[in-house]
Length: 123
Figure 1 (cartoon, rainbow, N blue to C red):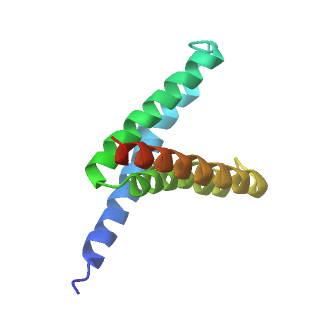
Figure 2 (figure 1 turned 90 degrees about the vertical axis):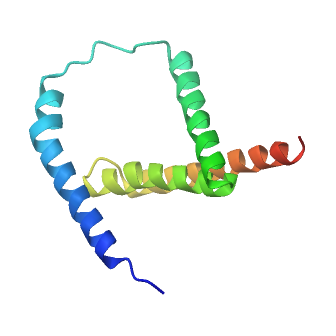
C-alpha cells in the first residue's frame, strides 16, 4: 500500500500558509472596514437561495462521486469542520451548540441523500 504522507504534509502546509497569510493580509483588513447595511433579501428568500445552492452542490457532488451518501457526508463534514470545529476552537460557538449543529447536519444530509437515492432508483 502506497503511503501518501508527503501529499498530506505538503497539503497541510499549503492550507496553513495560504489561510494564515490570506486572513492576515487580505480578509482581516477588509472585514474590519466592512459594514453591514442589513439583509440583502427577506429571510425566506435568503433561506430558499441557501437551500437551492446547497442542493445544487449536493447534486453535482453526488454525480461526481456516484453516490448520494458520500456526497452528503462530504458536504456535512465540510460544514461540521467549518462551523463546529473552527468556531468552537476560536471561542465563537459553545460545545452544546456545536453538538446540536452536528445532529442537525447529520439528519439533514442523511435525509437528503436518502430521498435523492430513492427517487434516483425509481426513475
